[in-house]
Amino acid sequence: MLYIFSSFTIELNLQSYTTQEDFLFGTLTVKETLTYSAHLRLPNTMTKDEINSVIENTIMNMGLQDCAENKVGNWHLRGLSGGEKRRLSISLEILTQPSVMFLDEPTTGLDSASALFVIQALKNIALDGRIVVCSIHQPSSYIFDLFDDLCLLSSGETIYFGEAKLAVKFFAEAGFPCPTRRNPSDHFLRCINSDFDKIAPTPLPSLRDSVVSVSSKFETSFTTKDIKAKLIEKYKSSEYSINTRKNIRQIALINEELMSGLIERRNNWRNQLYTLTIRCFVNMIRDLGYFWVRTLFYILISLGAGIMYFDIGLSNSAFITRTKFYTYVYNFLMCLSVGVLPSFFEEWKVSYHELHNGHYGEAVFMLSNFFASFIFLVIMSLSSGTIVFYMVKFHLGFSHYCYLCMNFFLCFATMESVAMIVALLVPNFLMGVGVSALAIMFLSLASGLYRPLPDLPKFFWRYPMAYISFTSWAAQGQYKNDMLGLEFDPFVQGEPKIQGKQILQKYFGVRVNYSKWWDLAALLFLLLCHKLVFLSILKYKERLVLLLRRFCAKRTLKDLASRPSFRKEKYGSSRRNQPLHPLSAQEGLASPLS
Image 1 (cartoon, one colour):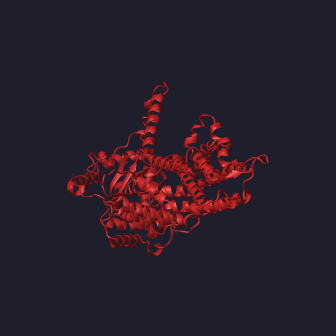
Image 2 (tube, one colour; image 1 turned 45 degrees about the vertical axis):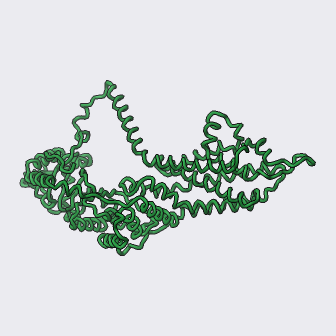
Image 3 (cartoon, one colour; image 1 turned 30 degrees about the vertical axis):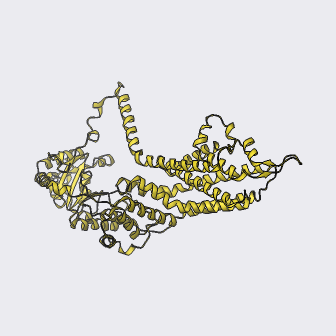
């Protein structure tokens, strides 16, 4: 059956919740969106044909067959209409065949035709034997006629709970009949919503006033507060309340074995990881802003660096020029990693919704994102490394070339992890760009590119920043990779050539008592540490925020209570500040589903 609810509490194993906002990947088609969701959530005991059958039936039931191959749409792809997106969001929730569906204002932002189409689809779902519970504001008369049951709440109080078609009769019996040419839902809201009194002082006439002459029709009137009080009192003693209590008692008699049998089976984590990786990879390929545009920028910056430092040579000033080159390349290439933020924010909106609905775990999300981006990071590393290595003409040799590319890969992967960590901690994209840029600057200052590591201030910059900064290990490793084994022209003609090892020790303060591969290993270790930090924030951020809010609230209440001017009873008359109670408690019953 179909309900209109403003608040309802139920505990079942098979349930779904659809929010007002649509959380969808704009690069995927309707069918792909449903297919990936089905493989993530449906049990692995189902065959491929059975899963495809569920997907096709869902598309047909929601009327999405005409747009099944259309992409949802994003900033550069034209996609679905608002009504089609809403039906797709509902389709994602009915894939698992939930017994109870909750929807938060499913018609928000839709035109009248799209809204009617969505509610008609929900009506069909309800006719299949499922319970559909949705909150809705100001439905049209056509939509209102589709509802089976209606619950009207105002400031937490039950105004009416019963069959939707009998609500008009109840209001008429209470003395507030619905005019013949008015939408019933508009009339109900006008009676119980106290905000109307703030807009225009036009209290409604009672039934008694409608029988008097027109001149005296509005002499006796009610405010919204009076109407609500009368409706509440009328409902408590009405047959509608008695029938509601009877229905709740019948629900309470449901066999507990049947309730315990409603267990939603999910796919195993390996299949979820595979499916999620494929979905992320497809999204990254089709989203131009995720990696393709950044790869182009990496190539352009590498070409610019190669042209400016072309064939750097082995003159006595070449080692200083190399330092400038490293500073240029590392700083600019690291800054470009911030470009992942816009696309990651869009992906995170969908993943956040799925994580909170239990579609998969945090570790699966983290691993799938890294595996999907791996090939793109390799492409960016190889393209940038190849250009700068052969144009600038570093220490030639295939092993030196491989080291530079691996160095770039670990730097790009680590910096992207930093950007994603920032994205989880800040509320929007603009703050993410600013905080990420600040993080890059802090990490670069302690890298040894601007000042040799031994000359850095020991407090904070040398210990611990020089060890925490991945650019510090990257720069030291590349110094060794490039300059060890080279000989530079002497400052005075006729003197022996300067060894690269001497330059590293004397001018750059680089420790050469261990191999460059240990620097690369340290980079890999820092990448793993950043991934673990990312995973920890994913798992525990919500809990920490909740604890912090509780602590701040207690401190605030304690400070307010200590003020002489603070009086609790001053605010006691407002119903908006009174605690709300479950609907079953208002009916004088304990919830059978708690």
